[in-house]
Amino acid sequence: MTGALTVRNGLAAQPALATVARYGIWVAVAALFVMLPQVFRSGTALTMMSLMGISIVFALSYNILLGQTGLLSFGHAVYFGLGAYFAVHGMNAAIAGGLPLPVPAIPFVGGLGGLAFAIAFGWVSTKHSGTAFAMISLGLAELVGSSALILRSFFGGEEGVTTDRTRLLRLFGVGFGQQIEVYYLIAAWCLVCMFLMYRFTRTPLGRMCNAVRDNAERAQFVGYNPQVVRFLAFCVSGFFAGVAGGLAAIHFEIANSAYFSAAQSGNVLLATFIGGSGYFFGPVIGAALVSYLQVMLSDITEIWQLYFGLLFIAMVMFAPQGIAGLLMMHRPLWHGRGLPKVAATYAIVLPPALIMLTGVALVIEMSYRLAVKAAEGPRMSFFTVPLAADHPLAWLSAGVLTIGGYVLFRLTWPIITAAWADAALRKGQVR
Image 1 (cartoon, helix red, strand yellow):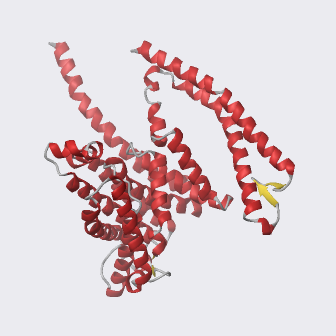
Image 2: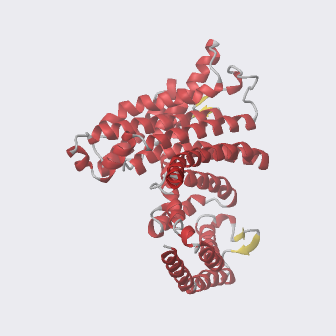
Image 3: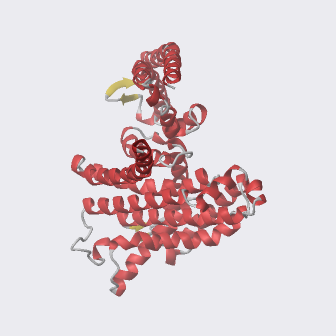
């Protein structure tokens, strides 16, 4: 009898532990958002973290299409940009009319703007999938982008539309004039949107999005209309993209045609794919990484977008599941306790890989200097090291770093293979 009670109590405790673990993650994320400004106090860090929060919401909204429903869009920035414009016009209307509209409600206005146009454009574009959907999304992006320069009364032409968030209704005495206040507003909306989008993936509609992604014909065979499923997912994605646009409007206090650009759509595609569209937290990692690299690399080199392209190509070729896929690949090693040994081999592989990448970067920078910046002369600096891009010794050094680093990197591959084989053996013994 005692044994039966023990088993029953243990079974009853499992759902409770699962619930605590599930919601404990969100509590930990909220605590992280609160503590980050206490660690990184500079204005640059606050701005970067705010941009990361906006990018996370935008990337997760895009992943509802790409990762959840299998729809590759080349124009998702349309709903981001329209959300920003609706947010700016909403703020200006509230200021002019003296309406009691606080700043924290503005992202919802942007979300409604994104949702409205997602409904208008989505029913047409979701009639198709695959390449046809991608081309329609690209055409809609070009249509809205060109309209932004024609309909000046709404879009403000090339200059855009500006606003002043500090003139809105103060909430609990907070005027959102300081960057730290804007950061916490973005962090709060980011946390709420992350939770809501995660819960969406666990709803029956979210599961049907996965079914339509994997096999639309079978989903239709069991009684579901694939177009309706794609359309509903498109509307949800458009709403959260509009929320991200509203957050951007609050942060920058301006909305202009750059929000509709192909670069904006390309950045969210890069962030989602690099992070890993197959996992919910993949776009979160990708958005944070891409935002960080945009801010940091733009201060180091003028051709930072080229490095983004090379990173994207490398992920497609060697890690199509993204960074999240690489992390989840190591998950089984926890049970066999083989992770420390595999991590130790990575410490051996990392130095030659960095040497090789340094050589490649040096070749790219010197080529750019000679081909594009020839009028400024061959003198340049690479990581504060002065050199001449036309000197043979500089090219010899770049070749030695690239080829030598690759040879050393290639010699370490058997070490990784052996470590993974040993980890797999230990896992089998534990089972």
